[in-house]
Image (cartoon, rainbow, N blue to C red; front, side, top):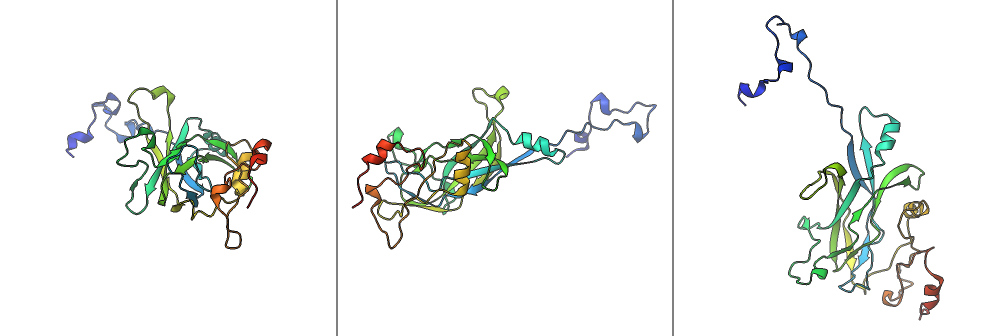
Length: 254
């Protein structure tokens, strides 16, 4: 870099002829440190049943992925950090990832029907929910209870945190990615090999109790002593929100 690139024509940094001492030079204005936002996995996906291409046969990833946002700022007080957790314009976007080839696997190549181009179905964006976890510690969480995968295979989920600025939003605008994290590898099975849904975790139950829009599952995972066909049973019923008439309409076990 030429020395001229280090010089400035700004009069604030020009020393008058009668002031040659370095002590008289104005110090540059120090910008306050910006807070750092990061996300981490709090609940990993473990398995899913492939939902195929029918809209009525959606089977969600189990358990639902849950992320937590952390905020750090060297000069912030505990009260300020607590306020920074409440970011109404923070969003997390999810994509399906191929862990073997390390590439985005959300889209299905070779399809012509626009409704069937995505391998990952459901709500791919989550907004923040501030509440207490299963240890009664407050945090900012992003929940993904409505994700389904069309085809069997081995996958991972990639999550990206973005904080939007309403004053700068417009056609062609973009927002920087604050943090990225990938989930653990999980498997998507066909109907025959899927072993059923697990009971909801304590974290899921705790967030649900505080108003988070996430379902609580009773669980119906099979084991070697109790094999049954998931095709004939509902495996994603909400533990406390299921309508009574739906329960009565279920077919008895064979």
